[in-house]
Image 1 (cartoon, helix red, strand yellow):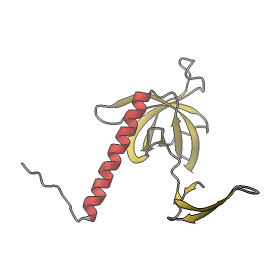
Image 2 (cartoon, rainbow, N blue to C red):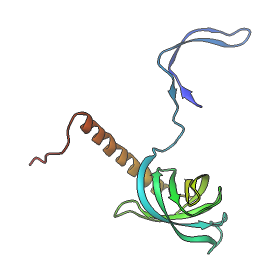
Image 3 (cartoon, helix red, strand yellow):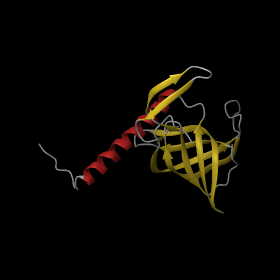
Image 4 (cartoon, rainbow, N blue to C red):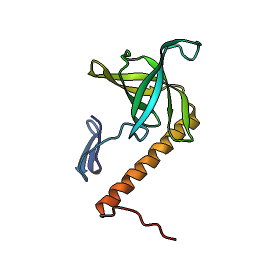
Length: 168
């Protein structure tokens, strides 16, 4: 895996090959490989499996209007649970309501990983394909907002605050 560690250079020796003598400052930490924050959700969705040339063809549907549940989401992709058995590397168009006001109608993506949970239950990890930058930014902002709410709730719980008092 990838790790990060803070160090201090104590000594360098250029000959015969460049060598560094380092002092470790902090413990090793697992490096974050994701570009976007991923949050757990439970969002019902509909999806249509589509041909790999979806940017060029019309009506290339393979499986139309299948149901699933988005279980995590980020600005770069999402994961769906579904009884529909699709092939790895398949493409799909996903439709769901992110919020009451933000309804996603045609979010295209590629299945990067498929996990068979049972004979009738599959989990798909999907990377967005051709997502407009504005929508990607909106998804990322939404995920960050959810994470801030989660962190706030954890902090309140840790401090023993069980409910909020409104002041006027």
